Length: 381
Image (cartoon, rainbow, N blue to C red; front, side):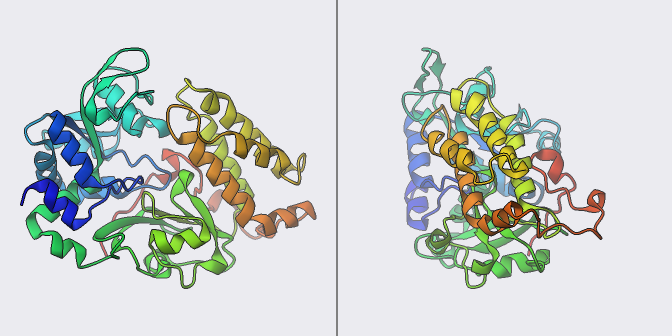
């Protein structure tokens, strides 16, 4: 059985967040002689899986990349100055140094950077795996971009077979998968699990849900908040997470600190997102800073009902060269819904998360951006 048929039988999907069928991407890559970019950037808020794969399974990652590339060039993309870059270079692998910005690790941003351009999303006429030209007429060489965990899983499927892969998970989401868990006490704990496992079991090794935690963030900046009252009985699968407006996505779980105002957490995330624009599309350049300002008005009481936030959220999706504004808009909309009770407390002039006995300087760094997740720990179960 050839690789494409084997991957199709296994049901492997991308582990970077989009969950696209890997067999389809590999088949297109082989048909067009596409070069491969292995995305090991850990670009999502709270992500840590790519670094874990590079640190613990580099030989299998390289084997998977060789199978996917089928003789075409392979490049490994990682954030500039990261430990992941250092490990890849030490192994003698070709490395693409990626700016440590949110949109820089988007698929077409990596393609643009790999061909000598800026790490910005491309406006393209067809999938980059087919090549072609961008909106300015510049040539795009056929390129397939796969997440590091996905490429590692390709090697596992080729070595152990489709039946082994399907022996865990659910029929809709088969196979083992990694998840990065962050809590007020542990940052970026990487666990190997499978779809269908109880979410509480994933949180437990990192300390679980502390009393008073206002919410669980699933999927990072492009994800959704889940009310803590819904976590018990919730399973780690798209089918089950859908009932609380979430999905497995890039495999990131963030337990909010009960000592930290969740509205302030959202405020910091949106302020950071506003500065991550690639500077080429209106929704990013102007819409995200406006959304951040609207949320600040809600937080400070200038717009206590959040009317402007709701209006802005409705305007952002479906525009621009990438899905960054869509994800941030969904993040803010989810915060409005799940944190409504907290908003009511703020309107009454009090914050239930305020802990006068806790020194703010000693609280965990629950801020968006790479600096918030320095000192990550990466462990297998």
